[in-house]
Length: 313
Image 1 (spheres, one colour):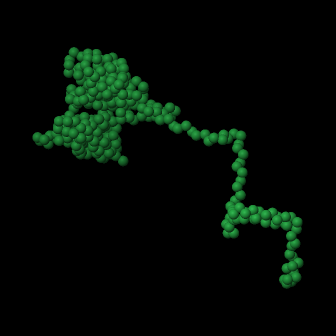
Image 2 (cartoon, rainbow, N blue to C red):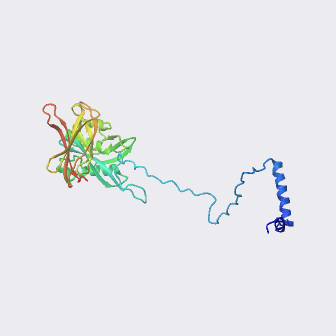
Image 3 (cartoon, helix red, strand yellow):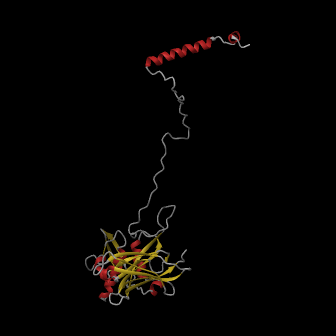
């Protein structure tokens, strides 16, 4: 049956515990109303807060912060711009450094590069490499050194390197020898001038007249280059215009272009030009930089840099 009698039969009479809970609930509601913070009928009080878990015996209360990674600044005397290096994972110090060495070709200063194991005594290493002379490929390109053995940096202070250098009887040789040292040592940020003990300390500007009209600083003699290749250097040429071309092993022109130096016709300025070429295999090649003659349009003041051209992919 589903009449009123049956419904009354299953109705439960509140027991003592339920009565006590109702009293507590009613008292709590009165307290909330008195405090003016009665909850909204449709609101939710959210989950009950939980006590923080007890700290583990092996966990420190303060959070450990890993020390910042240490970047080793270039060693005093390292070349500028920073040379390509191979770093050591254990120490973060460079394993190799690339030196810019200035030799002589046809009575003019010519730069080349040499990569050697890193050392703190970079100035000493540079002079030793300069005195040792050019490599076979550099010698084939006409480079020589006038620096004798025994040249040594005695001290570097306030941007001046003091160098002991044997005197040369020929004034032209003596000046070219000093210019080799000045241009090689002033690549380092700690050296701006060189004191040979015979006159006032000299900087690059004091020997700028010994530079070739066009100087190629990159790529260097013997470098492996890829396409596109970027050619940089300085020049003092007519209307500051420098033409550059890439030649393959047979002397065929693969690419050519021209740019203007930042200064020219009586002053020296920097230049930079990027050329793309295509070769199917690695081979010997040449980067040529020159001035186009205003008389007949032929290449003049040519600088040839032998390189290895890598296959174009």
